[in-house]
Amino acid sequence: MSEIPASEGSAETADRAESVRLLFARPWDFLIGARSLGDLPPLDRTELAFAGRSNVGKSSLINALTGQSGLARTSNTPGRTRELNFFLPEAEAGLLLVDMPGYGYAKAPKTEVAQWSRLIHDYLRGRANLRRVFVLVDARHGIKPSDETIMNEFDKTAVPYQIVLTKADKIKPAELEAVKADTADRIRKRPASHPTIIATSAEKGWGMEELRTEISAFTSD
Ligand SMILES: Nc1nc2c(ncn2[C@@H]2O[C@H](COP(=O)(O)OP(=O)(O)OP(=O)(O)O)[C@@H](O)[C@H]2O)c(=O)[nH]1
Ligand SMILES: [Mg+2]
Image (cartoon, rainbow, N blue to C red; front, top):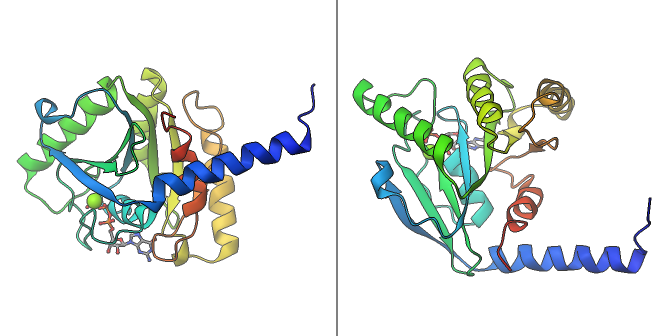
């Protein structure tokens, strides 16, 4: 095994920190809300999507990541986000973040839920420039059957995904460690999963640097 000299390693770390800073120092803008596949933006940027059960905290996490509390609309009521919402950094980086409607229970008309469920499914299965899906899981509950279903699909279709635990502020540190370990166990044999689980709190800002670092690895320069 060849060793990386310490100086090179730290230069690389500094470069990475600089690209995180560049990407998140400037604002992000709402680009488009897609209600059908025909509304999707062109395929020329890398897309990173935030998926998860309704109310898990997808929109809140995008707001916390960008430091813009009003960027994505959030609500106490599950079923707030009803389109695929695309966000573009003002720092031209060749990528878009995608806030998705949730799966599972939602307080919305059945026909509308069916429509967005179809859209989620079609988008996640067939999007060529989708490079990673962050699968958000409530830290209080861990992986649920509906998360298993979507992960099965990703494993089958080779869509790379990474688990992000949300609302970590709602449990004790020891409980968070236990749910992290249990979650890691449950994804270990899944071929398309990323082994690192990121614990976050949008409310407290926990885990944001870790997640920003993952995201900035996809910038085009
Ligand atoms: N305590 C705490 N509450 C959070 C956190 N993240 C989100 N919430 C709350 O959880 C609720 C749902 O948040 P959203 O961001 O709207 O969730 P979502 O996954 O986008 O929901 P849908 O769009 O309906 O699928 C809101 O009341 C948020 O304030 C967090 O890190 N900590
Ligand atoms: Mg939402």
